[in-house]
Amino acid sequence: MDIPTLPPAPVGFVGSGPPTYDAEPTALPPADPDELDDLVADTVLDGARYGAWTLRAASVRGDSARFRGEPRRDSLLTARFGTGDQALILVAMATGARATPGAHRAAAEACHWIGRAIGRSHARLAQDISAARRGDLKSGLHRLTDRSLGKLRASAVEQGIDPEEYAATLRCLLLPADPDCRIRVFFGVGAGGLFRLRDGDWHDIEPRVTDVTGEPVVGFGSLPTETPEGDRLTMDLGIPTPPSPYEPAPEPPREPFRFRASVARPGDTLLMCTGGLADPLRGEPELCEYLTGRWSGPPPGLATFLADSQVRVKGYADDRTAAAVWEA
Image (cartoon, rainbow, N blue to C red; front, top):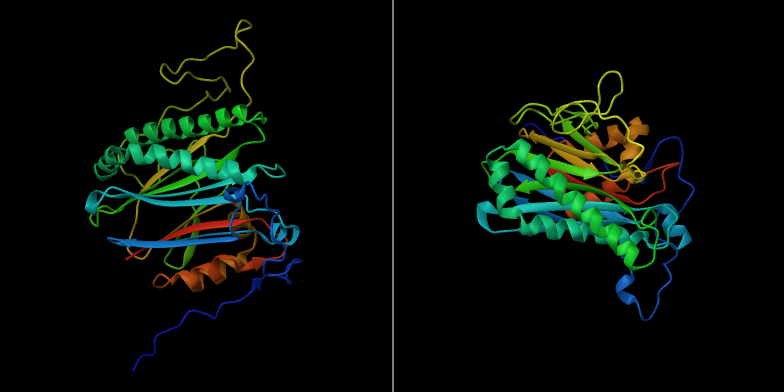
């Protein structure tokens, strides 16, 4: 009789040695009795299953913040819009700017703004995903993302805060509940990671700025943003745009919008995460090997996923937020 192979037992850390900080929370962030809604839990955990996929998501305060009594700068939002096979599930995660007092609030606002925008447009988005209208999806999500981050900047101005300090990265997954739809859509702005575990190997599929899609869905690529000589191109005409001395000074450069629409295969595991997990995944091969053994089989339970996602690596002490999708 064949004995099923079990995944390796959980471990506390991988790499050359134990991390500097303790493995468990030490100090709580300071609390204002008149602003208790501003408190952020050390850990958030969520999950779901629709059609052919299972979702696990977690956000954990980093070792450094746990030691110093600082709030978690990462924020996580999971939400279902609509009902039945027409429902659309959003997973959004954001990271506030480092060393700024309102980082956790900015991250939470970024998730809430994009959540509202997606929720109000979910019916059209679900239709575009089912019909594989890649061009409509990319332009629409780019517009919703810009609008949401614009509201974040406006909020900073209202609070009398420098918008560059009250800022956040934003990364999102759109997952249709329709069991016949295998298209998975990623979009966002800022640092982090998008990885796929397929046939026992991790693939870094983070879209580059010039990437237009993942595995082909529909359509052709967009025009390049500049010529081989480095001249900027207009969006519509594709002609060089010289700088003008009569134009006002440009705004500070913004992070590029990233988009990927790809078709999932049975057995895939798709992982979206903030920099706190993306950096050690890219920098520590032993962590990749460990998570391959843990996540190559059926989806883990919530507690097991949490334990796996916070396996520590020396030199990486930031908050970790991760959402993984297992394809049946």
